[in-house]
Length: 201
Image (cartoon, rainbow, N blue to C red):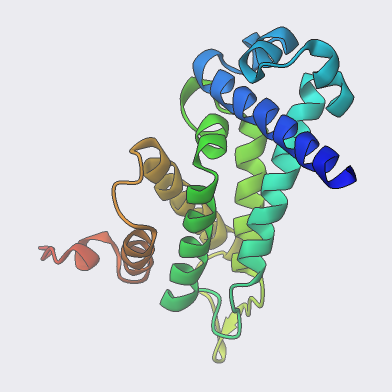
């Protein structure tokens, strides 16, 4: 009996969250009411309050769970090689895109256009930055880097997020593996060389 009850609770929570994601895309977070969520999920308000205290509690729970899953996916990426090698950039990008693809409705609601939740993007960027900074060695051989470590990290994270948002916004026009492959080579070789464009002085 408890298993049936647990499954019913899981289904109800999933219905609430699906309704919530859809409504964020349609109306924006601020405009959504608890009644809107209840109506879309085909439950009553009391059922909503059995699971969540209020709308911010629902938002924070959704973000925390998805970010935890994202972090776990990224943690599994090996870092034994140089964290800024082509391989690690490609592996981390692919892990993130595959995770996003499995939760595309949520990520679209959180990251795209005027309805996006800014604090969510900041937290995603922090996860990416922490991974790229893992195992960082500020000295290459016997010489320090020619540019600021912080500047390099900001550039990589901004580029990373720009590609992620383009991919979501355009309904995943390329497979995750292909985007990851191309991105890592743009970073490693520069956009002109990676595209096979000859640059004149």
